[in-house]
Length: 132
Image (cartoon, helix red, strand yellow):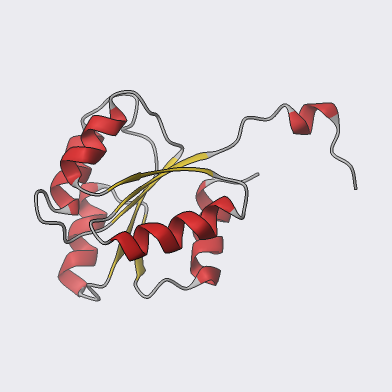
């Protein structure tokens, strides 16, 4: 089926991945780009905040444990930025911990996925927060 002109004019959805581990940045970026998303990466909380000064993603995927600023602190900063406060933020973490998930929800995270990444779960998150 060929897309109509209005379909091809639709802007591509943008995602920011924040993770201090290069392997997870690479895996997620490749997975998302093959689905047609525009992806930017940040290797730290400070890097993410700097990127967000000039970039407004439709979705943010965020690790919890990072050396300079943990994901909870970064989410708190993001929620205070008017242009980003309503954007969905999904944690992607190896921390399968009830307390971490509870804190994420209380801070306004949209969802919480566990590493290793399951592509079906990523697809579910994309369908839920970035419907096409």
